[in-house]
Image 1: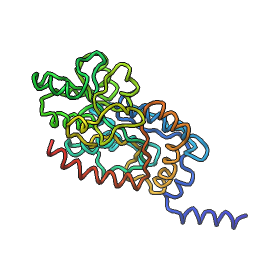
Image 2: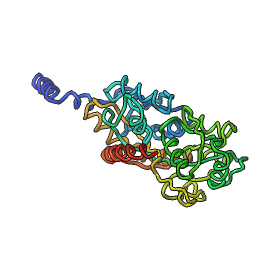
Image 3: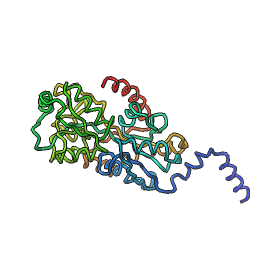
Image 4: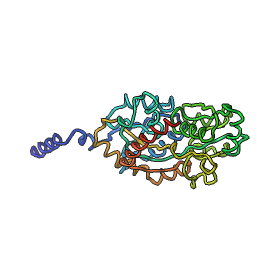
Length: 318
């Protein structure tokens, strides 16, 4: 018995600290910071994709959502990148292009070099929406009125240099008009301002807009093709003669801070794609009008680097 205990102790010493920690990880609930308001697309989807986390064969512990909204995500991500633990018990949801564009345009505490992607759960295109009682029935209608009334079309979005804002800048440039952007703390309050008539139009997520479609007109989708699953009748901007591409498509997933033990990162990276692909999760995502796009850690690392390079050039042009 003594020999067995000595051998076990020797093995524990021989294993790197990260491997020893990962062997039992997690032993308690894990938090997931959402840098946007409750009820918005990121919050809504995060609660769905993490609902089976405690299942046997997945994380084995629940994931607790913590909302920290403000400044289009900057408040939550600045706090996470500077204050969150690096033991794997504090994770955050990322939004691309949001956090990458903000790190290019502003002095932030976060960037692709001090955060570690785990896996991606979805990709949500931006759409242009107006209240169902609006005089506008197409993107061309809005463009024509805006040309005659420069700066009078108010357009809401979830903060500065998030996907909504990037789509707005592309739409404004493609239409050759002057619009007025009204930033909000997240997609949910931005959409409420359209529904309540506080603004004339909004750029929002496909998923949020889909769930509110009975009270909206969805005039165009900022992607390279129509969304055949949820909005097959909504044309792309390119179909309507406006040069707006897929740069603003909102990729969502989970990340940790740099410095998290590699063994913990590897364990999370193996579990998360399975969690996102769970049948219950997929059904709830479909019911909520939320497009799924599962990507593993390597694919997300590649995407982050490509978007960093692309957005640096795009934002200079806009």
